[in-house]
Image (cartoon, rainbow, N blue to C red; front, side, top):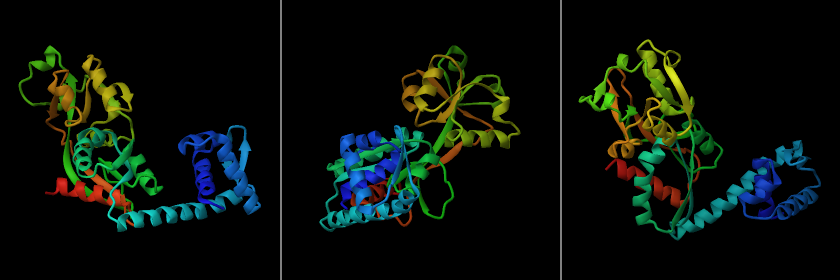
Length: 300
């Protein structure tokens, strides 16, 4: 039994596909199949049931999975310990970030960190805050950046900065003539709204603020629900409606005059951006360095 077989097993279990597992580790599908067959022969069990292109763990496979993860993590920790011993801050860093922080804070952090540690490269997954947390709990991403706290005893959150949510409108004459930096809630209730997806922290904060004012999303004229900030901004830019987004995330569009932004007087739409990690996970040297750099950047 070798670690190539273990890695092949973990990836086939993860992707439920020999071909996708092969793509993930840059090997051919026959090589992955050979690794799995060798492992099954050595253990004298069938680890996967094959259903055409789809595969599922057998009961024996499910039992072996936890052992495989432990062996894989132990090997990685051994290499990480050696790297840390020699103070080498290099290699891949897997970060998970929710949509707004990916635009508003992550570029600044990465810019400064890369100047200090040029040998580090990144794998960044942009996803909802809920999915960021799931990735951390599955021991996939090492660090996450999110716009809300999801209670879990296994997680530690570090407050980084404030994030204001604002109303984003087309840059039409109707809004251009508004000289104030805020609008009244009642003045926008008849507008067509472009909303973020339901599990977005931005959407949830907006919904909560509406409910505190006796309103609900159901009472708004919702034109569309979108998964990304850029999609929402483009739809607003072309006059299809208004949206509520992070002021920092929309800054470029506002600065170039493509859209306008306003605070909503009755809605306190201020939230925090957090760095989050699993409390008991041993971070790689590059993740430890990234954590320390990020906290020093925002707490100096």
